[in-house]
Image (cartoon, rainbow, N blue to C red):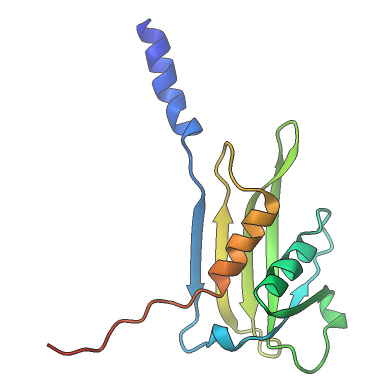
Length: 149
């Protein structure tokens, strides 16, 4: 009986895992002003993550399109979204983690970045993960109040 309890205690952290979300914005970048984003198409994107990013951006009211960087329009693009996705197979294929960056279309300066790692069991669907990352990318950092006492 004690062996069974020890075994269950060892396994408990694996079943109780949670997802990890981190995000960061560059100082001075007004992400709320971005209205047009180009999503760079990755050659290894066999799961159409780029299209999910386009839909998530459009749901936020941002004009978005995807394709190879060579097809990016020369004018009007305010940010380029670059992403990396990692998938796993456990009797089904599912997204394990996604990392995204918003970069300036000309200088490639980092404007914002977000990373989401899925909970080991259960977790969010691919669309939910992409939506969470897009929301995090455009989340404005909390500003400190400048009230004096």
